[in-house]
Image (cartoon, rainbow, N blue to C red; front, side):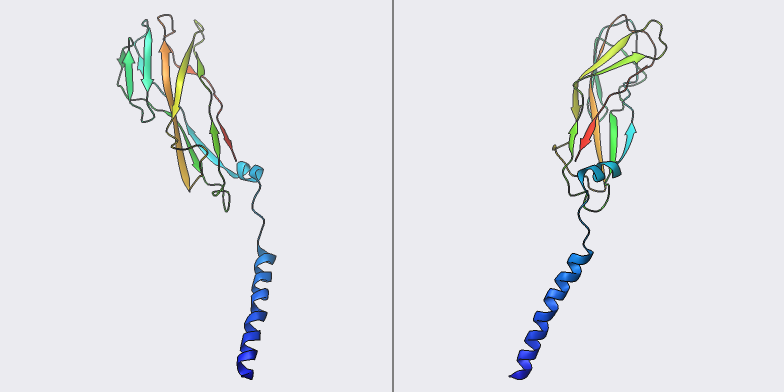
Length: 169
């Protein structure tokens, strides 16, 4: 009977010691600001390819890059490149946090030749993000595409333009 009592007391004494050692070495979870600072994002630019100038219409690109044309004639193919954001999980405990993704309602791009100065607009932006907010697991990819509206007066030149997206923890 004595032996059982000693064994029982020994196990009770070990449990608080284990809890204490776990608590003593457990780091607090990183803050949202720390997770945002550690998030790695690689961007691939959106590319609607080349289309014949002098016509008006729309080019609709889906998030896979497939494009459909209305009133605009493609030159060199019907596959584009959606804007792509590859996110790398920022580290321990950050991958368990929700991230809210926001993008603009439209994108305005300017021709880079500058003469004549013209702009094109991409509207009806869509993303392939299945749920928002989401959690990054290792590497997550988000694609954005939309509808490019061409007019007969658009300069026949490459167009460029920045746009902001946000990843908020």
